[in-house]
Image (tube, rainbow, N blue to C red; front, top):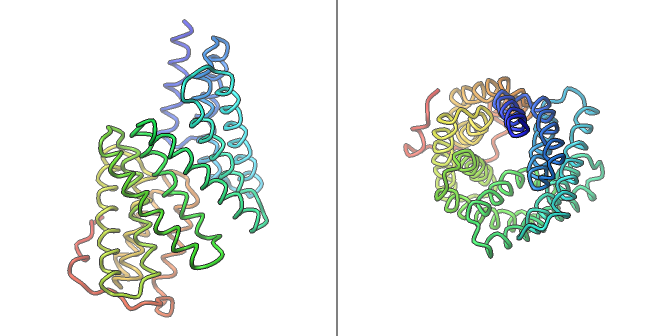
Length: 322
């Protein structure tokens, strides 16, 4: 009966996740975690607290007020701290990378709450260091899937990190390190059957390539980056649409919107991509997707906002249609 109860709770939580009902999913995961602890299955409780932390983090981006946003992020941090506590009392081999990964997520999430820019940057630097240590551990262990998953997470979160860089040399370093992470993520996850993480890797790699356009003056180099952004985003869309992940579908359109609107100078198509992002932002109730689409839509229709001449090349005009 207990096994059935746990399975039932987890099934309900997963169904709610697919509907982007993160708070309700977190509630069911919390009940499942309590049940796992009652049965002295501490590793399962640790796994579930990790899921709870993720759910609260995603729920924060659905918040309607700043106070609610901070509250949910604090709950995410608390869940990851519980995950660390659970893991600390187990006798499992190789638990240290998992504990450090949970610590890294707590540090990263705390950076969103911090109001001081220097302190926020310090937290993000700490997170980056911790994640690299986790990555090194998984590489030594030969855990290919975890290597890919950690690389993908670092790629996604690096977009936020670069906002707080203090000089151009830091930007160049982050750009080089992220490109290495992209190669590792794609190679590792292509060997697994985790379509979600693979789509996520392609998606945020595409965004990274599209954002990198702004730092390059060479037209040939920008053409190469634009082509890579398109190729990775198309692959992300293909997989995300197959698995029905609305958030990744919406995020996959970001790099396409960036390239077509600012660098290919096709404003009509860029605005259509913006509409797609807003549509999936509405489905997932994700404030980031909605606000990003609105912000870039406003940018691409303003001629003076384009600091670089547009790329006009047939190679990047065959973009995925809506």
